[in-house]
Each structure stands twice: as structure tokens, then as C-alpha cells.
Image (cartoon, rainbow, N blue to C red):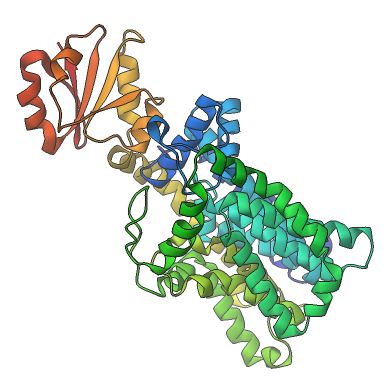
Length: 501
């Protein structure tokens, strides 16, 4: 079954290399863009710096903030991989972002696997291309995030269910049954219980809807599978609580209960809870689907006019499964008071599968000699595929580096590193140390508290040179205490670097 393959590269697999080349091109392009712009405050720089501390200290149990403050906000799976990436490739932007890209590539593969089992190779490759070129997926696949790892885990589990239900009983079915629980176990280490919710919630809604409860009960190894899930995830949670008592209460009650039902939750230890209008997640979702949401809408209109939707819904008998899968994050977070655009990621693979199948069905409606609809001509599909990557290339060259001057301390850190004469030289940030400042100073930057500047003269006259990074609004108070013992060295946006004479 290869319907739709002719859209990208010829039918019957004779020119299979062309759609695969498109898919590989998206991956390679995103790889080469990983290191073209700085790590931005706060999210990217924060998670990169947590991994840097993990790599520097060798403590893989307790993720930590600058200067060793325990970070209880997220489990460590993404930090583990980023720390290993730092060890292999050095402390740089490419190494920080590479694990997200690898996990995103895994998500694309799992999407292809599920789609190919149900719809065939043609729609499956289309689905993989659609997912890879969706706005939010393409951008976030190269960001330092926990959500990309979570999305891989949920996609692995949901694809495994497809393989279990459609497979013959035997070793293969048992294997995929354990893969289902493997994904949930990794999800607990990626972002906690939300991974279970975004897997089990759509699964059981679909099972009740389609009468598949008995099938899931019989075919999944629930006892041994749950044991496998706990063996993967529980040891770290236990070790983390032993090492830093109080972690479990804060993480499960605070991060997974109060954060989502209490707008502006004040118990957040690591920043401010995001106050969002309820239902905002749906707007994030529609934005994430660009430009393919318009293609899906056009396909649905075309199929409706032809009476195809009345005969068989998009996805056929599996349509409800992919529909539950793609909508689960939005339904779950609709009433949440704190949401981010990244929360929609776990639903995107199923959207891509539904869209790939819809495009394939519309293309199959025409006769062998009839041209495809204008919106499905090869040139149009290549345009949809290239739109987001091309815009992001422009942003990577013209926008993000300049944004880095305001939202990152990369350039300040590089400048100070070039000016240092010895390891005794010290770097002080006046009153506040951002995550990117800590990362790009390799954890050696210190904070100079504006409430207590009595020790400033001793710092200035100590051995080695001292650098002081001061925000514009704090320059007056800094100079009134530093006197004539410092000089203005360089300016980076709203920050000025001072150096002792």
C-alpha cells in the first residue's frame, strides 16, 4: 500500500529516495543550525546549566542550579543525555541541543512506524515529513528542553500499542507490549507523571470508544510491564529523596498539582508560575500545526465534497485512536492556569499521521491521468515542507544572534575569557546571575550583593584581576561604592563590563 507516494517522489517506491532525501534534509538542516545562536535565558540556558553542573560535579542524582542549589523541578533524563553530550563534544550550544534533536528524530521514526503499520509506507513517509516540518516541532527539536524527550517517550508507547493491536500473538506482540511500558518508564524520568497521563488518558478513551478494553487487557503484559516501568524509574526517585529530603513532596504535590490548578502559584521554588487564560493551549496547538493545518483543512473539505468522509473518516478504524492521541494534551491542559507552548508537542505525531493519511486519500481520488489538486501539487507540498525551515534559517542568521545580545551572556562570557590573564581572575555579576551567565562563565561567576557592598574594596584589591558586570540601572550605585578603582571596559546591550585598575 503506497498511495500518496507519487506526491513526493514517484509511486511504487521506484523513487523512494526523494521523499527520504527530503526527510534527511530536514534533519541535517536542523543539525547544522544547532550551534548558530546562543543559549537563551531562561529555559534553554537553565536546562543547559543544570546539565553542565551535573557534568562538572559528577552528581547524576540531584540536578542542581548555579552554585549547587538542588533543582527539584524536573527529573534528570534529559539532563543525563545533555551531560554526556558535553563530555563527548564540549561545552557548547551544539552539544547542549544535540540530545533534543536525537530524541526528536526518534519521535519521527516512531511516527513513521505507527503510520506504516496502518496506512502503508507512502502515507507513513508523508507523515514523517509533515511532523518534521511543523512549526513548533521543527523549532523545538533543536532546543534544550525536557518536552522533546517526553514526546519521544509518549510516541514510543503509543506506537507500540499500534504494533500490539495489529500484530499476531507471539514474540513480536510481547516485545511491543514491553516497549509500551518502557516508554512510560522513561517518561517518568523525562517529565514525571504527566507522561503517564498523556499516554494512558488517550489510550483508555479510545479503548472505551472502540470497545478495545478487552484487547488491551489480554495483549499487554500488565504485571511484568508495570514492574519494568517501576524498575526503570523508581530507583532515581528514591535516591533523589534520600539525598535531598523533601523532593518527593515538592515535585508531586507542587509541580504536578498546585502548578496547574493554582494560577500564579507562589510555591514555585525556581521562578514564577505562568499565569495563562484557560484554554490558551488550543491556540498554541493551532500555531504548532502550521503550515499543515491548512492542508488538512483543505483535504477534509475535498473529501467531504466527494462524500468520502461520509463513507470513511480520516484514519479509518484507527482514526479515533490518532484523534484521541493528538487532542489529549489540549484536553488535559485546557483548564490549567499555567501552560507553555511546548506542552502541545506530544500530540503532534498523531496530527502528522492523520494529515499524511488525508493527503494520501485526496491524491488517490484522481484518475491516473488527472492532475492533483493545486494545493497538493508537488511544488505546493515542497513549499509547505520548506516554509518553516527557510524562515528559521533566516531567523538563525538575522534574528537569533541579535536576540542573544539581549537574552544571553554568551558574548560577555567570551569577551571576559579573552581578557583574563590567569585563573585567579574573578568575575562578579552585580546582584543577579542569569543561567546563561553561569553557563558561559563555566560556573565560576560570582554574585555581588547590592545589599552588602562592604567587601567590594577587598575584592578590588585582591590578587588577580576582577571583572564586574553591571546592568544600566545599577551603574550609579556600583560606581558610588567602587570609586575610582575601576574603569569601564566594554558595553554589551544593557550590561557594562567594569574592570579594576
